Image (tube, rainbow, N blue to C red; front, top):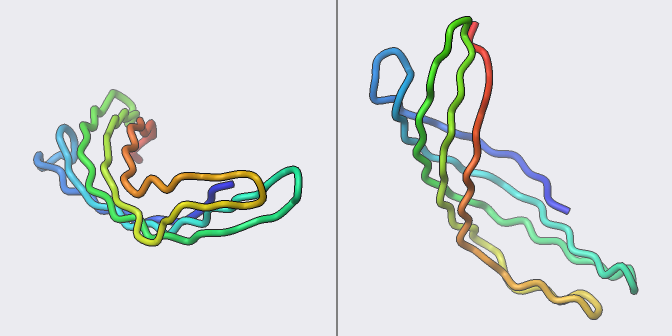
Length: 104
């Protein structure tokens, strides 16, 4: 199970806050690992530092679509073994996503 909280800051290259943007993000993540057979569990709480780039398109009525891609590194991750289960740490994170919203 994965949960967490993060803070993002972006810089648009156009005054209207549309088009190309770049930014940074810092997140704290809680990762819970559980062996369903033995019910043994472990938790990791890494900090993730990321850089991101994207493009925000504004549509009539205030609708916007902003696809973006981030590359981050998680500090404090390590391989986990719980019971008979094993998870390999992957400290580098690539996250493609799309935000859709309204400006008002």
